[in-house]
Image 1 (cartoon, rainbow, N blue to C red):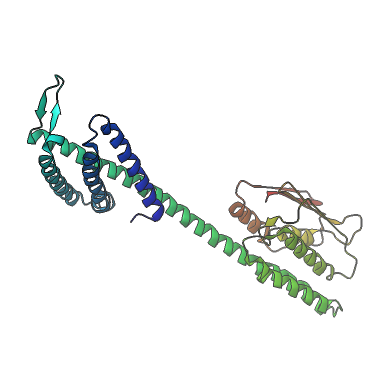
Image 2: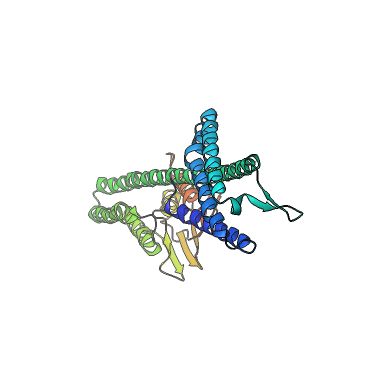
Length: 338
């Protein structure tokens, strides 16, 4: 069935068409124009929609060609019969005409039948064309809807991977503190509790305030600092021209995790550097660190792979990732249009 918007479009098109036909006929036959437009216009519109709703689905959707042809024949015969009955009643208006020599003549039944048949077939063909265009549009919208649902489901799955991944790393860190009987253990548990609260509740939205995401990164850095007996050196710098930018939650943590996992953070001459700049809706995130040869991660992480896929889904054609790696140095850089 037609939806509200489609009904309005159809109604508007018919009104415009009937008005144009009326204006064309009213000049030559002002007394007869209303009869021709209202009566025959209504009949042709009926033919159009009978064909649209009952015959087109058989012809196009179900491929029942013979049944469709049968129904078309019935509609044409009935409509021609009704039109000829009306024409006979208004014979002087409809059947009479003037030839090229300005002589009055009357259409024969055969001539009128052929004319009515051509008119009926025209409106049936028009109905089929509109039906095909509408079906193709609906199919595209349906495919687009399915693609969006698939993308949303994949994003939700990728996001769900972040929590276990982060929790696994954090619990390992806290276990290390507890094993060493460190006084930092309770504080680390509280920090992890704050971080998990953000991950479970605040990040359920499609986007969050960039300020909240930056605060989450700060908490993560504080949690990492509790791991070490030695002082950690982290240069974390934020430069933004606006505070109301929004970003997909938990997007930047993979860069930070990677820097702490492989970087040297206890050497004042080789700090982990994190820079976040936002100007004119463009985010520039950069993380760089010297590589710790004694702290090579033997596990195969999912962080950066997950991040790249989330960016492809959430920010298609709006991001660039640059990664530079050497034996002693690692740098990751993200340009993102918010």
